Length: 211
Image (tube, rainbow, N blue to C red):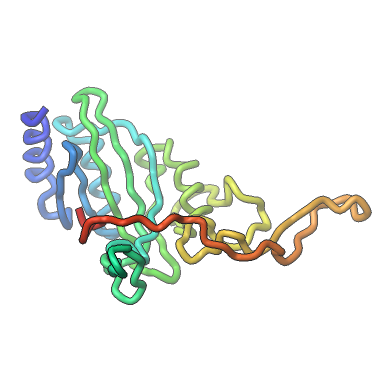
């Protein structure tokens, strides 16, 4: 297993060295960080280079790094410190790739350059299976995928406000809806549920989220 990982790292470095920001391994899994400008070229190389041959896209995940890695200790309990973000950019998409031929997996992280209006290039032209994955990331995180042929919400309602997986989205939401029997349609109204915090605090080792 270690030999296969070393071979993969060497192949990636040889063919993508000038196009990746960083390369790291954790638990025998390889993660690349790629710039928004180079993402399409990198994905084409990962797919088309015979020695790499990552022919399947398994998943696309959105991430909001707004408070990641910026924790402060209060009596041994770690809480978020929103003033010093660990990553310079807030939003990223993480792409999970599989090479059936080589029986290898790789993870590629791409940060959106803009925090207010995050955008990335759609990779549907590389892997058509990205279609619904990108729609889900758009719906949950508000990342816009340029070039997507049908970018619209896929999990929430068409009239939904906000992006539920962003860290600043309230647990109780912004609105609630119900069916009005008199109007015979679904109507929206201001949320009546009191905001609440349901995430338990955990005691962790110092710098836990950085490893």
